[in-house]
Image 1: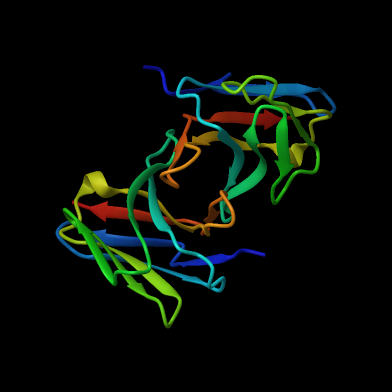
Image 2 (image 1 turned 90 degrees about the vertical axis):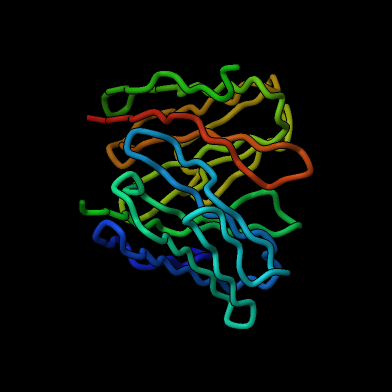
Length: 112
Length: 113
């Protein structure tokens, strides 16, 4: 069973628009929530990550919002650019386990 | 600084054949992982390893075998390839402590005919 549920499966956004990807989890032991970005033909690479002691983390145009009580977190891509077109994976990990549980991925297409 | 490499990058094999995918990292990371990526399923963990000679099953281990005699290498073997094992395979590694980030290799695209 997938421990992290991710939606939507795909989205299309116009250049300059906002892309929003949502993830939900059940395991309250999770304490690390990264987002990975993957371009076609490449391996995933860490984009941004958050711990549950903060509700928001921003790096450039990318922001993670975290809602501990709802067990949800989301990635916002502001001012989306064609170069942001990629597949994005959310993930989660607990201090008791060195594995990452990944969401199913969201393919983002930014139209110029 | 090669980081993490995988070979071959592309492989076509026939049903029933044995095939080994190689993974090599130059960072001396303790943890290593094998994932397969299929449309609609994201990244699914096949096997992982905490150190040399320590391996464990992930989410989808059936049909796969791993070994880790050296810290830097983590080969994945399909003992008798099946069409359902057609996929893109990623190897990843992680430091022992101080961070959860996994570093991924470039992937191997495997086609079983």
